[in-house]
Image 1 (cartoon, helix red, strand yellow):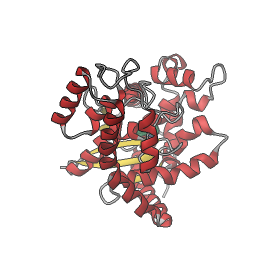
Image 2 (spheres, helix red, strand yellow; image 1 turned 60 degrees about the horizontal axis):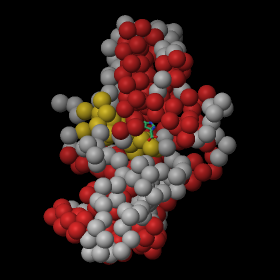
Image 3 (spheres, rainbow, N blue to C red; image 1 turned 45 degrees about the horizontal axis):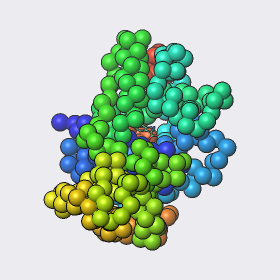
Length: 341
Ligand code: TRP
């Protein structure tokens, strides 16, 4: 039997952080290693242009950074096709066709895009490409006929949009070539990690992220700043665990659940200071990050090999995309010259 395809991706606008790991990388690596899927992972440079058109240098630089982060967390090019969005020309074509099957009003209702427009302070000057990126993202997913899309919770509206476009396309052109994708989300409560400042979302633009590539000293500095319980002034005071970022991180990254429960009890009882608690968290995060940092360092010593890997992956992905595009052109009827020999 043919394996189910999964596809996912990231905008190359910087290095990847713990939020990306928890929200999506963890699922990808597990799904990859299960051997049950045919995995594709895309560096979404075209999408990065939708809000960074005037900073191509950042995108270019971030492309290798993201590739290194992938390799560092265990996405393995022998098992997963890692490729670059802009190199798949069929994506531009399919996006164009999709653009006519969705209304402006429908796009205006996308809650994630609405949020991002606010966050980025676009106001009245939203680039048309940014506003319509859910359409191009639908092309990303469907050109590979991906059934599964491991992403963070904020991407559900993109999947809904993609499913609608598949249905519209199949019905408009009386075909069933395109496949409706499903999101694969992290377990409830574990899909999102707050920033070190206590903000619900870890993000580069908020400046509250711990990066997969942060060295030990940077990690120590960030954990030192981490938001705990503002009312916990003296070590002997009882402290709060809810909303305390240190405990949220421990819940996610400490495999020793019993130890975490004991620390929580001790903290609530009083007598456990933030400094001590934080140094415990630093050990936990160091244990998690050390192998990732090491692999990242190893791969970064041969950047041409990383680029070659992306080039090979893009070639592989392009072959799959082109075979779908052939069907798409036939379904729409723009295969005018097929009958000529
Ligand atoms: N929008 C996704 C993000 O910001 C990145 C992305 C682009 C993506 N194309 C995709 C994710 C296709 C999944 C599938 O993280």
